Image 1 (cartoon, rainbow, N blue to C red):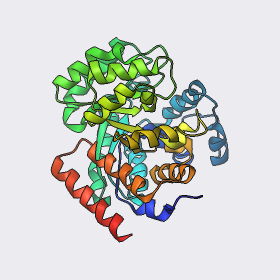
Image 2: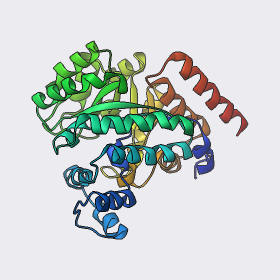
Image 3: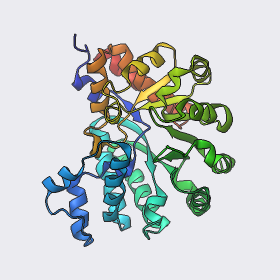
Length: 338
């Protein structure tokens, strides 16, 4: 039995995107265009060749494609174009609010100044208002780099504090537990920044990492994090404290064919604020509505479940209660009339 929810309904449904890496929206067309403009030899000369290079079978091979691709991003205008291209996709998917990850260390490590990428990305979030998308930025630490690198990155970011709203933690989790960055999270919180972190699916020590994020570091959201179902006590804690979980069905299929759907359904049933997002859409074959529909279609989600995922995305976003209420009323009106 297929889902009762159409792709058209999902595309038109108001939603928030909370798990989106801007560097992961680098489509082959823009990558090739920027490579030619900036005279960067990427080893490919056609769109087809670039698209064929987006091949990987585990996290390490994905990152081996992902990070070198960023070499084409050189100027403020490049980062602006990257973000605006994503934000047009967001508008087409009726994303009303977006909180966008960016990775400073992936750019400063190759000689791009902090002000270059932050100004380009931020300018795009301002211009997105014309598309009726409210967009903010979240600065991520690369967990496979050193604590000292994270410390320097946080310090370097402070002059631009008004241009981003929180910090996150991403990249290769293996042997890089969240507690490695306890000091950076503590300092960021003291600066008034929101806290989230990746707890990738089926990692070594997944449940211990999730426990530390919830009980010690005190994050407001966990990105991925569906392994929490292994500990009923933690699930109860997450529901009680309204912790957000951002699942990414299409990128999950890269690790697990069932895209962690059973875990998402269990979390929904237990009142945990889980929501669906697109992660690195240029690399995993779909933007946010594609992710919603993949999950709905594979697990026969009801309209009510799909709308709950969208409601959760607004409820766990980092905006005012007034703004949340406006978006949720819009969502409920949409659900009632469609």
